[in-house]
Image (tube, rainbow, N blue to C red; front, side, top):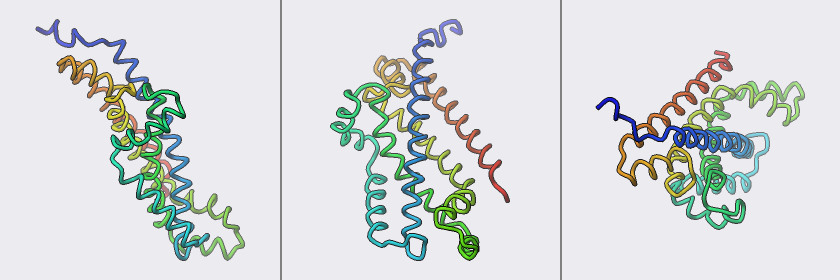
Length: 222
């Protein structure tokens, strides 16, 4: 019995699927961090009483973020099919999943960035302004450094969400562990493959959480 346990698992396919999941996650996390940080800064800076107060820009940015943050990921993939096909030339494979992953996660992270920036003591910003610091200097030397632990914690949560997004994208042919679990496990009624793929996804999540916690603690000045 023990000799037959996991005998049907194709370990080389599992390894390839894990690499595809790591590829999709790493690329989308990087792009989400950049776009989400920019969007979050726009949301915060254009709000009432802040450095770039602008009601119209703030309303438009909030509307865009709320729309894309509210669309279920599996529906977003379908909605983005024409855009994805035009961008990558295909709806299959890891690269085809990236547009939906990034567009789905960036607005979510942008709200986390905005919340992190709101937690900064206004007195620190006012002190920088009184010393003649420009807006760009305040952004680079005050806002981002002061909110860095929360920004790292936020991107960690977002990265874990992206792992689950890659699994959903895999069901419709994006590759990765989700595709492996669905095609080799579920469709062929092989619970062992589904179990092993699930464990692999959990390990990826645990590693991401550990890395995120490490850097959050390293940058926390409290």
